[in-house]
Amino acid sequence: MQKQNIYFPSVITFAIFGFAVLGLFGASFVMLGTSISFLFSNKPEALSVLFMGVGFGSEALILGVAGFYSLQRVMNVAIADTPARLAGARWHTFLMLLIAALFIGIGALIVEVQWLNVLLIPIFTVIGISLPIWAFMNAGLFEIELGERWRAWAIFGLGMTVGPAIMLVLELVIGAFFFLIVVLYIATQPNLLFELQNLIAQIENITDPNLILELVEPYLLNPALLGLIYFYVALCVPVIEEIFKPIGVWLFARRINSPAQGFALGLLSGAAYALFESLGVSNQTGAEWAVVVSTRAGTGLLHIVTTGITGWAIASAWLERRYLRLFLAYALSISMHGIWNASAITIGLFSALTFKEIEAWQPFIVGASTVTMILLIGLMVGVLLIGNKRARDASRPTV
Image 1 (cartoon, helix red, strand yellow):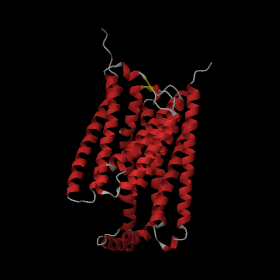
Image 2 (tube, rainbow, N blue to C red):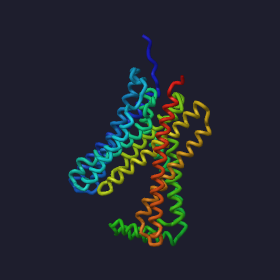
Image 3 (cartoon, rainbow, N blue to C red):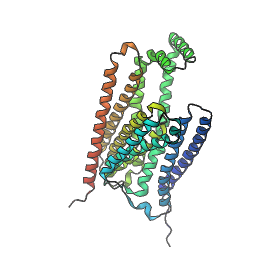
Image 4 (cartoon, rainbow, N blue to C red):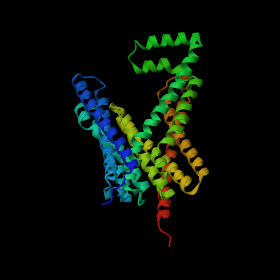
């Protein structure tokens, strides 16, 4: 009998997913154990640690599926090479969004009840985050073939592991560089340095967050600091993330059959990153829980759509030499991501500030940013649905 050759990409992805699953499960168990200890000690951070433990455990389970299919490909099991397609009818999209809204609504009613918070809210968080992402995937991937099953799951898994790891390192490096610039600038301004030292001394003796905000407000409104914050959040972060979110599409570009399939695999990769990011940061407790979980749906839609656009352009560049299309699609993804981030940080910042000099402008600034995000959501839904239709039309055989 002829010996089957080892397909090294499947070996590599299996190793990556295996280590990631072990690491996430380990972190989950540590956090769950720590949260139990904190609960008995009545420490306020107990619920946040519990939520993160459940989130990491959920990510590990999902990555376990990706690892399973990579292992099937390593072992040359036939199912690994069968065509993959997301099973779901159009109405499933609305059903999943409705169920997610129902769980978030119920969670908002019980979030202040301590024992229900511990037992149910972590599960509601996973459902409230995962179902909208699944719904958007269902809308974008409806009736589109993803190619080999193991490859689709590999791209999804890379979007939850290698892509975020590279992004995190680069964003930390750039953030540290900007922090160094600020420190060096402060060091050249003796008066400012003295003010900041006094500010730190005052903050150390204050426990009320509102009083702390009043003290730091004048510094937050400094044009140079605001410019640096917006430059980092609205430009640097999108530039990095929109390159590496579709990392699986980049790596498997030569095996993608068409730009339509590139679009679909880009959506899949974006959904993976959205799931990783949202489950990793949604550890908010208390009255703001429902708001945080709900807004993650919009962020998930952003990641899915922008990565789908880039995935389509990557496949176009590889298959059709449409390099200008790739550049323009990348610029569009950065722009959408940047506008979203800038609007979100504006709402958060100017909703919290109470500085009298800007008080009259706050409602307009917050309102304009909110409208911008709503319009952007409408645009992204349109891109998702139109992109799906065109991808399905392109996938149909011509007569």
